[in-house]
Each structure stands twice: as structure tokens, then as C-alpha cells.
Image (cartoon, rainbow, N blue to C red; front, top):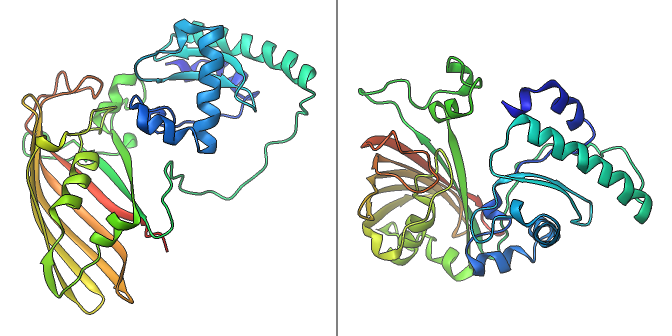
Length: 310
């Protein structure tokens, strides 16, 4: 394991460590990448990518995912890069060279080594919405079943869960985000005591959030992969109750099941919403570590209204 190497641990004390889902910083989708470039984090990482492409092109994977270990200067300067996985020796070498480059860079640009500021802990959201829009957060996880009651455990409940990198598949979970425009957010507002979430917004949520990314990066669904989705609601005072079902199939992979949820309205606006989406998934994608786990096996996705744009 790279990070159990004591020399790497000592080197890491000279860096400000950070972890992020690179798809939210430099997407493989060019339209999303352009949107991400306008954010601080996306702009910084993409500027670093340009510097890396010139200085060290073999470690800037283009086209394709940008998963890797990177050393980035405060203005996106290239200090070091290792695409995707890496042995401890190669990462140690990269970090050592990165520190050497940093010492030269800080003298050249008169950067001051200042203490890292202490900030209150927060739940990082990688996307933004317009005023009046909304942000949905999805959390995915494998679920226990009669075939394998150990699925969905916490990492500390798995024997040797951190001793080999592949063991993460026994306790893995993941998140995905979806920003909604003001017009899309309005379609989620309950308009009667009983009704149905419009199919158009339900399908958009399904294509982006009902995905098998538990163990790693995966493609979303295309619109025609959503064979069916229906989400009904009933409202009693401020409380909203949701029931629904869904089915997605792209030939070699599928996910179908039921939706159960609750929400809350305030002055006619939806201020809370949480859907639990449970059912069997099957098949694999390129990077989601399902080669030895074709299923079908239960998976759960919780979709929360993270920001109601108010």
C-alpha cells in the first residue's frame, strides 16, 4: 500500500493533502469540463492539467479519466504527477521531485510558506446551482442479501479491509451530484395533495444518479436506457410521501427496483426530500470493479435534496 510507506508518510507532511473525484474537476464530457473550468477548484485543476500536459504528458491521461496522484502549486503550477495507480517507490520519487520543484518555485515567485489555516469542517459539494435551482446528492452502496450478508459493512468491520487496495470493494460507497436549473427544481414541487413527479425530471435524475458507482467511476445511463420510472407522491400538511419504481437496462448492465421517500414543504416550496432507491443491479462498466461481481445483487442509492436554492 502506497500510503503505509513510512517515507511517503514523512514526505506527505510537507504537502496539504486533498482528495477529490476528478470527474467533478475535469470531466471526460467536454461540456461539463467547460462548466467546471469556471469554478475555483475545476479551474485550478484544469490549469494544472495544461501545465502537466506540457511538462509530463505521459502522466496526464487525455482523453480519459484523470485519476492519479498529483502535486499542484498554489496557482495550478505543475510540481509532479502519477497517473492512476502507482507503486510506493514511484510515488516517493514523484513527491521528492515535487518538493524540489516547490522550493525553486516559491523562491522564484516569492511564495511564503504560511501555516495551513484551520477551517471548520464542512461537507464539500463539488457543484453549484443558480438561485432558485437545486442540488441533489446521491449516495450508493451495496446491500446485504441472503447470498452475501456481509455486503455493505463499514471498512472497520471488514477483516483486513485496508490491507490491500482491492479489499475496498467489500465496504465501498460513493457519491454523485446533480445540479438542477430553477425550471427543473420547480417541477419537483408538489402541486396537489396527490400526484406524480413529472417523468422528464424523474428520468433526468435516473440517468445521472441511479448509477452503479459504488466501487468506482461509471458511465451514466442514456435516456433510452431508462425503460421505465414512476414516482408518485401524497402530501399531508407539510409532509410529502413518495413511492415509485424504476428500471434501467443497457444490454450488459441493469438496475431496477423501488423508491421510498419523504419530503417537507414550506410555504409551497420543497425544502426537504430524501428517496431510498433499492433493487438488484447486474453487469459491469469499464472502471467500476464489477468484473468478478456480475450479480444480480442488491444495491441501494439514497437521493437527498442537498440544497434547495433558497
